Amino acid sequence: MNLLDIRNVKMTLLLLIGLCAMTSAYKITQLKVPLYADPRRAAELSCHFIMDDYELHSVKLYRDLDEIFRYNPSQKPQIRLYNVTGVMVQGGECESEWCLVRVMPAPVATQAAYTCEISTEGPKFMIARKTKQMTVVALPDRDPVITGAPRILKPGEQALLNCTSDYSLPASVINWYIDDELQKPEPWLRTELSEPQPGGLRSSSRVLRLKMPPETTGTLRVRCEAVLMVEPPVVRDTSAIVTLLSQTQLSKYVSKADINTAHAMNIAIVWTLNKFF
Image (cartoon, rainbow, N blue to C red; front, side, top):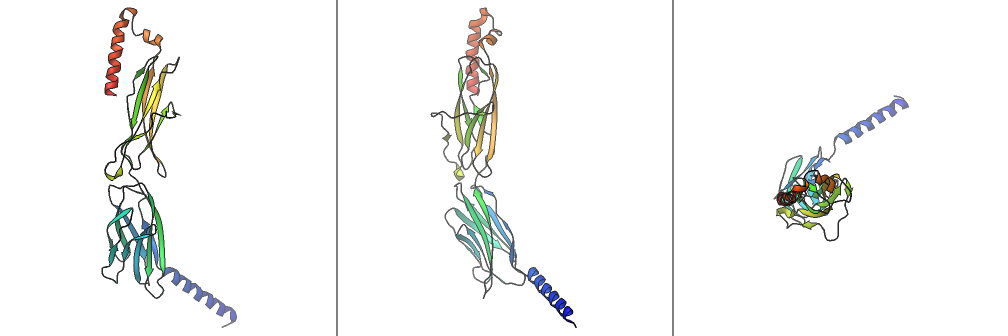
C-alpha cells in the first residue's frame, strides 16, 4: 500500500468517526413555551430531548434564574416541584424523551425566560440548554364600546362620548380619533381603570368632548382605539358616525309655523338618544 492509499484510509476513518459523533449525541430537540400565558388558566411547557448513547442524569426547568422543576430518574421521588415568586408549579410528568410542566402564572403583566436543561450522568455531567420567553397577558375578547355618541350634532352643541375597553391584562390604553386624527387628551379627561377582576384583569375608559366645528357640515367619524401594550401590540377599535347640521339645513326640515313644535321634538330626540347611547 503506497503513501497515497494510507492517507485515503485515514481520511475515511476520520469521516466515519465524525459521522458517528454527529449521530450519537444528547440534545434538546424542542422546547415548547407559550408566547402569551393567561393568568386565569395554567400554561403547559414541554421539553423534548434525545440522549442516544448517553444516560440521562436530570431534566431541570428554570424561570429566569430560579429552578422550578427537576426530574431525576435515578432518585426517589423522581420529580420535584419548586414554587417561586411569579409562578406556581401545579405539576409535571416525564417520559424517556420529554417532560411536561404545568404552571399557573401570577396575575401580573410580566415577561420571564424559561430554560430547559438536560444533563448526562457522571463523571462528566455534560449539559444542554434551550430558552424561550413567556409573557403573562390576558387578551381582550371584544372590541371597545362607545356610549353617548349623538347621531346628529347641531350648532352650539357638544357631546361627551365615553369609550370602554374589554377586560385585559395589562389594562388597555385608550386613544380617540376624529377622522383618523389622534385627539390629545384634556387634563380632566384622564383614563379610568375598573376594579381588578379574577386574574388581575381591568377595563379602561376615557371620555372625549366633541364640539360642533364652526361653519362645518357633513359627517364626522369618531373612532376609539384600545391598545394592549405588549410585543407586538394588540389593537381593537370601534367607530361611530356623527352628522353635523347647520342652522340652514335645520330650517329645511321644519316650517316657521312649526318651529316651536320641532324644537320640543328635538329636545325629546336628544334625550332619547342620550338615554340609549
